[in-house]
Image 1 (cartoon, rainbow, N blue to C red):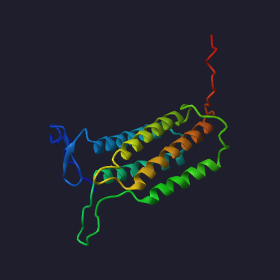
Image 2 (image 1 turned 180 degrees about the vertical axis):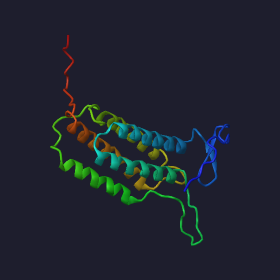
Image 3 (image 1 turned 30 degrees about the horizontal axis):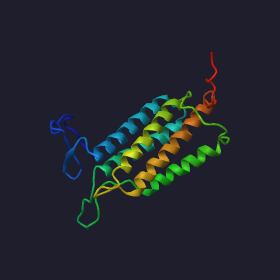
Image 4 (image 1 turned 90 degrees about the vertical axis):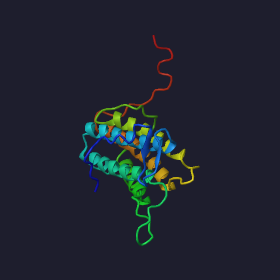
Length: 195
């Protein structure tokens, strides 16, 4: 459990921040950019939860927010923290967390007809903020991929999780829209000859 007695520490005033390992790195480093993108993603999911009307979607999004804290802790711990038994004691995202997202996507998809058009990032009942979270998930995934060439790159299943999460958020936005007035579809060239 984490205990925070004081919110400001002044240790970051010089442009560096601490990792779980105790190492200090620049706040502009690719690792901190990735951690920040995941944090922004988590906050955007919190905003979506405030608008979602479905208790089932809200429950799954709460699980995702917890997963993202695990993912952030994983990114903030490059390398291992060896325990007494020699095993890594760092909090890591598990591959099974991505599998659970795939199962959630399949369950939602089974309730809806196939797509016949591209969907605009809009809709009621939480659909629009879920689309925004999806776009932020894609950016977070790109930021994490930027760490792939580092000495201590993130595990592949972190990138897989973020990729599945954007798919889940897209599917959840479709479900939210369909349950609250319908999906907003793209009409190609609709405004080319508009007055």
